Each structure stands twice: as structure tokens, then as C-alpha cells.
Amino acid sequence: MTVIKETDFIDSIADALQFIACYHPKDFIQAMTAAYEREQSVAAKDAIAQILVNSRMCAENNRPICQDTGIVNVFVKVGMDVKWETTKSLDDMVNEGVRRAYLHPDNVLRASIVSDPIGQRKNTGDNTPAVIHTELVVGNQVDVLIAAKGGGSENKAKFTILNPSDNLVDWVLKTVPTMGAGWCPPGMLGIGIGGTAEKAMLMAKESLMHPIDIQELMDRGAETAAEKLRIELYEKVNQLGIGAQGLGGLTTVLDVKISDYPTHAASLPVAMIPNCAASRHIHFTLDGSGPAEFEPPSMDDWPDITWEAAENTRHVDLDNISADDIAEWQPGETLLLSGHLLTGRDAAHKKIADLLNNGQSLPDGLDFNNRFIYYVGPVDPVKGEIVGPAGPTTATRMDKFTDMMLEQTGLLGMIGKAERGDETVASIKQHHSVYLIAIGGAAYLVSKAIKSSRMVAFEELGMEAIREFYVENMPVTVAVDSEGHSVHKTGPSEWKINIADIPINTN
Image 1 (cartoon, rainbow, N blue to C red):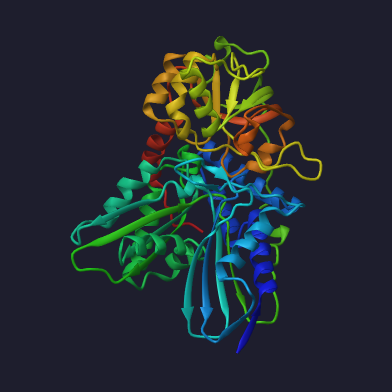
Image 2: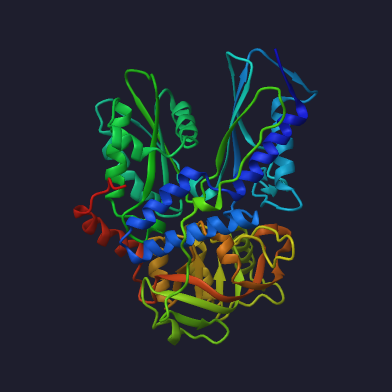
């Protein structure tokens, strides 16, 4: 009988979460490198380059790949011949490991979990509790799959129950474009087919923890219906032309994973969950000999590329800018921002809305007039950092507040991630505003442009508080110009046509 010690299990959970916060899996690096090498869209290739450079920087400096360090998902298979040396429950041990990982003083991870989710939404402060799935199996080991799922990809999960005669491929191809780009492509699609509603969703999530191996599958050829479907969906989803960050390009998904389970004759449950460019997961096994050990990838695993803005890139002084200036900016254009900008996410916008709706003034010192706001919730700084990783969050969550901000606060423009809704684009056009994007999956790279940070308002909101950043040469792309032209519409449309003549199956 194998004896698993409490300390070994907790240490393994904590170490695994610290590890996946900073290191991409080698298979992901290789797949993203291949996507970079074959990408023909300038904007998409630039985005992939930033993701790869960010990945290497995080590995070298032991800092999170993304500011969203995720809600922890754990799949634990416990051998029935295992004996535990502990006074804690399995869930308590997992959560203790999560707590230690997220509060590690040398690499603080962002606490993103709120309790009382339909009430006070109070941050738990240590990212607990995790979402834990436990299974008793034959054997004398403990097998663990652990991931930190970010909100951007998690929030794009889709589910349907098809009729058995319906075309599953058609549903996927119809549904993927509705996910937008807030899930930070290129990444993976996990699809669960069969069982019941909750079983399908669980299979979709677990499938995303398996290695990227679509190229190997295509090279040897499909042998099962699920493998045939993987190849078909991989090719057809990429042919949608959505591309990196939704900018239009050759690669939208690096792999498609499928798990299935017997189901009722009258139904076909289908769940689909994307995994983003900040893919974070790992597998380990405990056999009683001590805690799990995790070996970082070699620096040689990353491609020898750098990211630098082109010589003709427009430099923007945020402290001396007007509506006339932003009217010159073109959709898809890269800008380098310097000067002061404000930050703010959902909770801050809700506070602002409540104040204005009640006829109250904004807090002293909070002035949006002729300013830009960056939708970000940064990781706490360590080791002399100004801020920790500070990549953009999905901007559509702020859509409901945009008209108010542009009409009532004097806000000039916004910086976020992915597309904006049609009504928001219309509001941007009406107010001659502009929307810029930073690259999701390049949070640490972006943070290096931030030279100072100070608290401005709503400190009680933690990572959601409003801060003022001073930035130097922060790279962004014009996503919606002052005339309402959106690259998230034009880019995929253009590349859906271009890609028709370009083979996907390339090494």
C-alpha cells in the first residue's frame, strides 16, 4: 500500500501552480512557433511574436505569463490502494496548496476568485477555493491534472444539445465566430460529446489538458471517428480566418481535442471550451516517494525571435492628445503610447455608473477628461517591479458602460483586448472616440512599458481599482478607429478569403 503524505501532496499542488504560471508547455511553444513561421498576416504574426517573446521573458524571470492567473481546476484520480497520512480532506489539501502558490512572496499570483458571486462578490484573497474533481481508480498512485483557467477563455464556453441527426461540424463553425477573440487565440478547442450536459462540459475541460499533437495525427492519419473529426475541425476552424487575437490570419487554433462518452439515444450533448494563448496546465503522479518535481523547459525551446516596433510606427504622447489627433489613426495601425493613462475594469465602471446615476461626483482626483482608460487588473509587483504582469482584459464586458463613459466623463479612448460589440462601435463612431488593443498573452511584455503606478480611486477593489500608469512606448493596435471601422470585422473577413488557397497542414 502506498502512503501519500499531506505535505507532499500540498507541496506538489503549490509547486505545480507556481510552475504553470510561468512556463508554457513545450508542445505549446513548438506549435506556436510553427504558427509564427507560417503566418502571412502581418498583424497576426506581430501578435504571435509578442506572445512568444512574453513567454520566454516569463520563463527567464519566473513571472506569470498572463495577469489572469486563473481559477484553479484540479482532476484527481486516487488509487484505491492509497493510504493518506493526513488529518485534512482532499479538498482542504488542494486548497491549501492553492493558497500557498498564490501567496508565494517571490512570485505573487493574482487573486481572482470572489465569494458570494451574486451578492457582495468579495475577493477571497488567495484564489481559493479551487474546482476539484475526484475519481477513485484501481492502483496505488495519485494522478493529478491541474490547470489555471483564465476568465477570458472560460467565459467563452459553449454548450448545446443537438438532435442525433444534426451536423456537429456545422454547429462548431457557426459557434466559434460568436466567441469573438476574448479567449485570446491562437489556442485550443476542447470538445466534449455525449453523456449528459454536465458530463459533456467536464470532458471538454479535461481534454484541454492533453498535449498538442494534431500534426502527428495528421501525419499518421485518423483511425477513429473522433480523430477524423479533430482533423476536420482543425482545418475548417482555421479556414474561418479569425487568426491571432481575432485580427485575421492563418492560425486560430493550434489543436482541437475531443472526448466522448455514451449518451441517450434521443440526444447529442456537445460542450466546447477554448484554451487561450496563456495555456497553463500540467500532469503529475505521486507514488509515495515524495513531492512531484517539475523541470523547466530549456531556453533553447523558444524560437530566436525578438519584438520591435517598425521604424515608421506612430509615437503618441497621451499627455498632449486631442480628438483631432486620434482622427488620423488608421485601423490595424501599431502605436507606441507614452504618458499617463488610467486603469479600470468591470467593478470600477459599475461604481462610476452608480455615482453618476445618483447625481454624485467622481472621487477627488479622478478625471477622465481627454484621457485614455486601460482595461487591466495587474498582478501585484515583486522584487522592485512597478507592477506585475499587466495585460488587457476582454473589453466587451465594458460595453454596457461605454456610452456613459464617453458621454458623461469626457473619456477620449479605451485600451483593452479583442473586439467590441456593434452598439459600442457605433458609440465610438458617434463620439469620435477610438478603441485600441494590447496583445492578450503578452502581459509581462506589456508591463515593462509601465514606468510608474499610483492608486487613484476605489482601492478597496484590489486588482479592479483605478490606478494611473505612466507608460513609455506601450505597444497597441488600433482596433476601432474614430469612424467606427473595426479590424475584428475586416481582418477575419479578408483572411477567410485569403486562406482558401493556403494549405493548413504544413510542418
